[in-house]
Image (cartoon, rainbow, N blue to C red):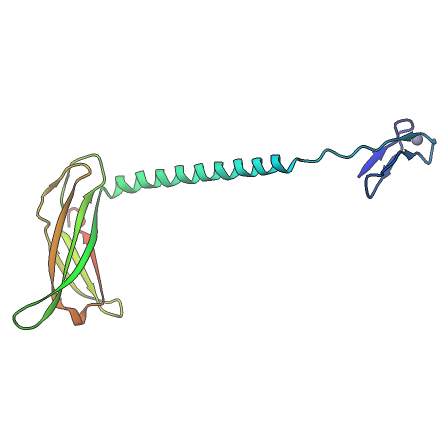
Length: 169
Ligand SMILES: [Zn+2]
């Protein structure tokens, strides 16, 4: 830290705050060096907390904006709730998928067709099937349940995904 003689303005560099008064080597004036103002740890903590809260509020605002944009672009979503199996008279077991189509927007929407993709263990599409849910229109916030039996046997399928058919497809 630095201290300056009050009388002759000579500047001195100190390693630490002296316990008693200091004497100027030039003019002999003595004075007491005061401790530099320290930032209170509580204030530092509060400032850090405020910065963190501001960052969180900003992040939530960004996420909320992202969600609004996402809903605007994709008002309808298909969700897979359950996958079971069924075995037919020829002893072939197939997956039965069930789920729902949700309308996340505040408008009424026509329900598009659903496409089920079946993948093998290498991630390659082995089957693509289209089917229609039971409802043709979905009110704002509503959902319609669906259930569908895949045509490919269980042994050939490693992964299933359900997608909404793009409008105009
Ligand atoms: Zn001096």
